[in-house]
Length: 80
Image (cartoon, rainbow, N blue to C red; front, side, top):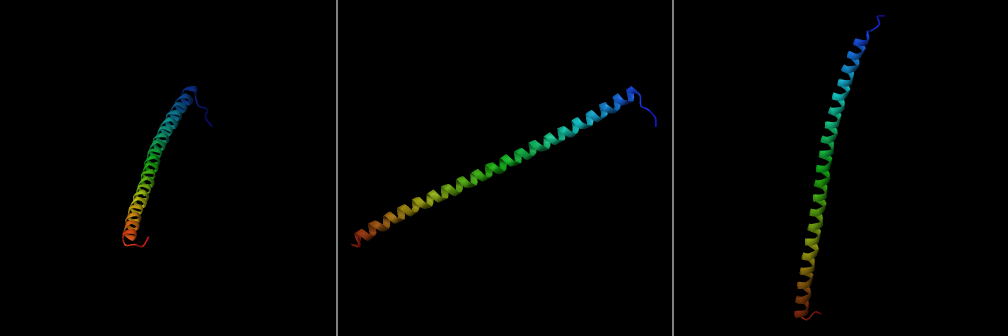
């Protein structure tokens, strides 16, 4: 087995370090992409929950108005 010179070892180490740095940069980019998609999903879910709450509030408000109208009609007709 042939021993490598210091120059060859430095060259190989330098090449390995560059490869590791590129791999880490790709992983970081993937993490940013994943985080961005996760934030978008969380935002969409918060929007959806907000819409459901608004619809529920509007329905409750409409129910209250209809209930009030029914109460007035019942009173006018002499039922209450």
